[in-house]
Length: 570
Image (cartoon, rainbow, N blue to C red; front, side, top):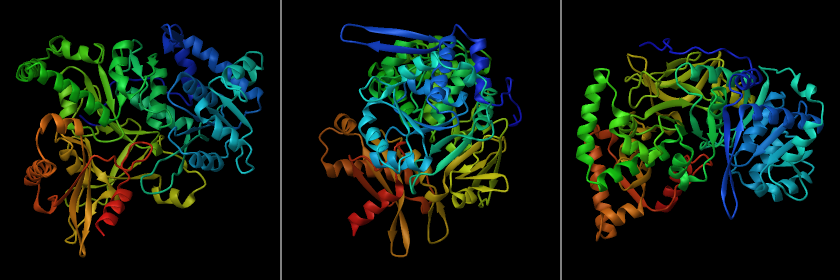
């Protein structure tokens, strides 16, 4: 296969207004959102059809215009919920600028983001009322309008804005022309080593990325999606727009602990998640199989089904129905992004009849650069470049590993009011990702790590932490780990810090003292070392139950962790 071979064709749109209107026209009676309404006595479900959604978008957008928000910038902060999605789409279909803010920001970070983005208005959840109300009084903060998603005394509610819009000048909103190539989305990255930068995206960036995703992946109008990935991430918000463009129904999770329950409750068939969660889901499946004493039986069944698959006979979903039922019985597609997914997990789920697709992208590319697809998968890779994206690898070493740079209509305009940072990554029409990787003879892309994370030894050899971390994370008791270079004289020792799972330790290492347990884990590390050239050997290990220092996107802040370790050793 070549990366120029694609399977589906869809109409191309210039902006989200065209895309959403086409979807509403095509799927008017389809359910767009499933809302759970709970009280002390009962749980009810309310379905919002695509037609309903279109009417509410029109009303909310018109209401925002009535409040003087035409051509203005509107920030949104809160957890994934219907009101967030409604606000986001309403803003963009009125050619206003959306500023999704990370729900995990501190008060100071919220303030700085509002000042930096020059937000005129903020749509927020009740929990942010104190800080938002306080900020409105500050001269430096440009907020002119506060709108709460919930009913709260002292702030206008989203319902009131919708009511205002239903009586307002609908035509003014509907007839607004979209500036498809101007900044209409301003997203702040959560860099692990520097302060956040404002990524300027256009509506064309988003619709081009949606188009290319749909050319290689199957999203069905009968699907139900669970909106787990935060909407304030590009992967989350663009992913939701993909669902809306495909006639898919979306439900909202009750929280991390209830994901499995929600799979059953909503009959979820499509799930877009992060590797850590997908690996945890698969881990539970394996544990259940082990407890039932069926490990060997399932292994044999996989061999039989794999053989039949080569003959064009697919019996996986029938053969492994009891296992699929653990995920609600309808799960057919899992999309993994944000980091590398363990190869054994991807393969294991695919062998059970649940298609697992690995993708790769960044906020700056709206976000998807490459992905596996319905017909072509290679475990460990991040697939092929998307239909309208060109990927090049530059400054290759002797192993063909170099920095990935990309070109395409999904690449951002630049960093907001930061010409220096923009010039560092946008050169001659190419966006330099800062990620290292290689492309095999079939065109599959493999990511080996971040350029800034590479451990360079005195002899010039390079060690990619991510490569070793993938292996260490396979040790059952390891919850999370970080491989780093520990300074030693004028060189560094490759080392690993491990956060272990206390529950698994209690179950699997009964009676072992701390010293004995540490020795057991270290023996596992030595086994990994044996598979590596000597310069990659991990020479030191730190065991802890403490959480790593992380960004709001749950990425380890490596350099802060390393600084903390060095300071402890001094």
